[in-house]
Length: 387
Ligand SMILES: Cc1cc2nc3c(=O)[nH]c(=O)nc-3n(C[C@H](O)[C@H](O)[C@H](O)COP(=O)(O)OP(=O)(O)OC[C@H]3O[C@@H](n4cnc5c(N)ncnc54)[C@H](O)[C@@H]3O)c2cc1C
Image 1 (spheres, rainbow, N blue to C red):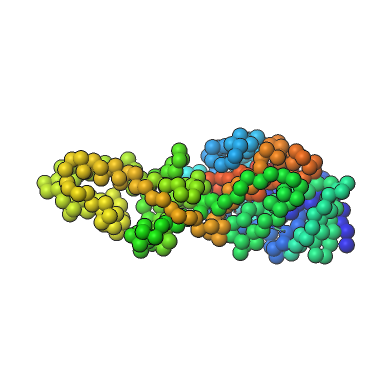
Image 2 (tube, protein in one colour):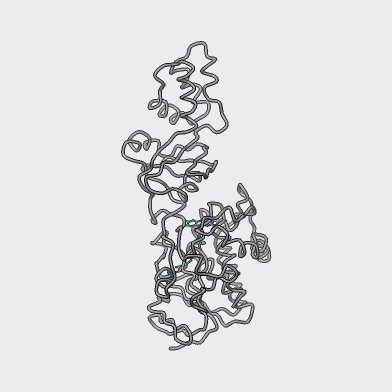
């Protein structure tokens, strides 16, 4: 069976669906092909089931890319306020949790229902359980699935990244980019827990479940948020954020007591000893972490220089993770289709007219906190409005 459309979009995730809505509203006949049995699977599991759908403080600085300027145009033309207007039009209750992060009050299903209903109004055809077998380009794009053939002058690739393969992530988008001769910036798991080396795992990982507010930094980037010990290493928002900047064999630095002068009380204590240190540290850090950390950082003596060194160490606890927990646990994929290959206004390939890449498959990766969805919406709108 052959179907003719003005645009075929691969992937019914955040970017694919919003792109379909924007193009459909402009009167384009749009088909969205999705291999899963329902739309927006990642939206449904996002934000702990409540979908952190945007961030009101979204800035270009909240994104990583080989070209940090690329995302600016799309982000400026489809802002958090635009998506909030859509959410409010559908009377979806939401709240700001922290740091500008907006979440649904009820469930992420509100967002998928909203996108599905917008697609319906815009006359978009969504074809589920459509496994793409082949894409060719002659005078138009030809997309073959197991049971049908779709023809269109425009093909939008919105198949997302490699993270969480059990949710349906595939490498189709990257394969298509390669097939059409587009460069790919090496992909890697990002927003992902880090694995500690054997020695540090033995020392700290039975603290699994303990968390503390820290500043985690790597290279010139720093994030003040919660850090969590896991049974293999470190996680929590501060670590997920810094993982996006971490590369193999590089150390990360953790300030366990941001803006606190920890040793001041020990300096003034009547007796300077490990008991005084424990009691001070326990006022700042969770008890088990305070004890464990001091066990491995007990100063050789309690002189002023040793205490000064202890103070430095608590603000500059340096660890060298051996790995990340990989795509199985990563929230996103960093790297992807090289932005040099795409128009920043429309997301269209410079080399292959009519071929577009949007969302996570592109080399633009957001910080934790609703930025990845904002990129999905903004890049989708940029493409959808140009079709
Ligand atoms: C656990 C988790 C929680 C997250 N929470 C948040 C959050 O709260 N806020 C936030 O901003 N970001 C969050 N993210 C990141 C966010 O989900 C993604 O960045 C976003 O979904 C990317 O949108 P996308 O449309 O590019 O890709 P996706 O939403 O992944 O959509 C891609 C679609 O393409 C389909 N597809 C893939 N391969 C094929 C193929 N071969 N044939 C046909 N279809 C295919 C997939 O099934 C999927 O439906 C989270 C991610 C995870 C894993």
